[in-house]
Image 1 (cartoon, rainbow, N blue to C red):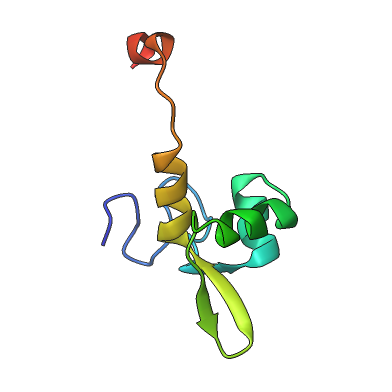
Image 2: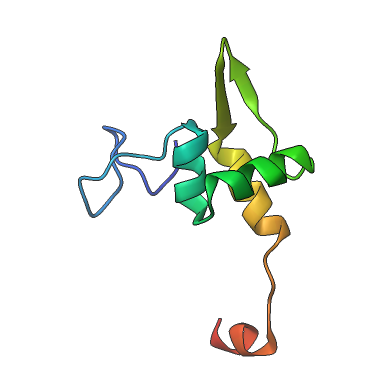
Length: 82
């Protein structure tokens, strides 16, 4: 279990729920701040993998995080702040 979670699964310092394992297309798009059509374009380009469960299409939380990490840009200013 991650050290930022309490024994009951909630985040330390608050009552918010831990991240979901996977999100629907609208929720995944909202989670990373893009439109649904933008997310579909990224899926079509092979940038983000999908999970099919029956007729549902889901995006894994780890896939969203990996996408954001791959597209992270570190500037000289942000290195100085760290």
